[in-house]
Length: 113
Image 1 (cartoon, helix red, strand yellow):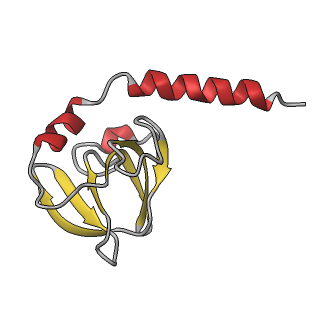
Image 2 (cartoon, one colour; image 1 turned 180 degrees about the vertical axis):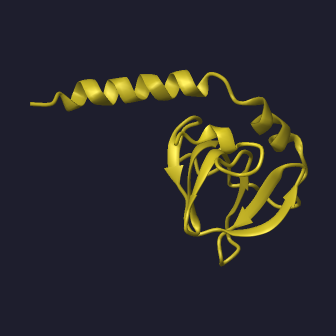
């Protein structure tokens, strides 16, 4: 029988360790003026169709803690600037910033084959 209580504690500790250090690229992205409110910053984002799985930072909804892995709703590109990608939901009500995307130029070595 699996001890789910122990598993939850281990997951919480892992998130706490991850959230202790915000990547410098996220800090740089947060300092930039994007012209819209950024709902969350996505790090090590992996694209799956129109959605992304990523490590989240600065979630405005407070639904996710820094360092947690999240799945986004479908997203579309608004603009790319300074190596970052400003994304929005099709309805335009939420904006996400991809700070670092796995498997794209410059980050191709991030994905294990």
